[in-house]
Length: 227
Image (cartoon, rainbow, N blue to C red; front, side, top):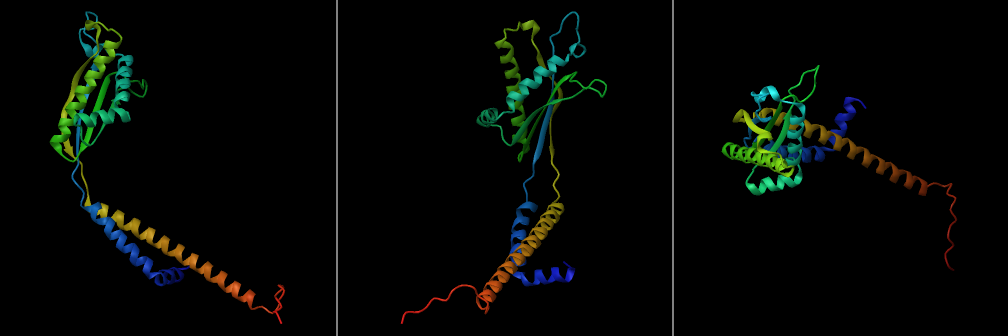
């Protein structure tokens, strides 16, 4: 199909182009005028108990502690936990994500650090949600150790590695407008070509059927009328 043929199709199906332009304009308005979103985040460090052999908790970290921290995170990322957090007042979306502090030579979770993030449309609500997430994580870790009757002096604890902070997520209205416009143009052209092809096939079928009915070489028997 040449460019002239494509232009002819778009000209014939002008009503499809008009409908696509209206739908694209309707979709562009909410894409451009979106609410501001804030990313609240903090990082926790899961550390072993202090002992005479490891007075500095950072020097006594083991991959098994990081695995324990990841297990708690998996429990709090489930759908049931999301409903529970919603009941506690957590807004927006959240995520518990273990941070890999290993290297290429030793790709293991050496330091049990846990990143907690919350995306919300209100900055203060996001920080409050972050505090609820952190408190629940600490409580979940404590209940896990209570379940296995871990002694108080041998318990894993949580320390704040990176304090809570909130940043505004950037949004470009121009990029959103261009993206919606491109998708609308491509989709509208595709629908126009498909519509033209469909109607063309129907016209050809009707024409062939009419030609067959008017052909002098018809093989079907004529029905004799009653005298």
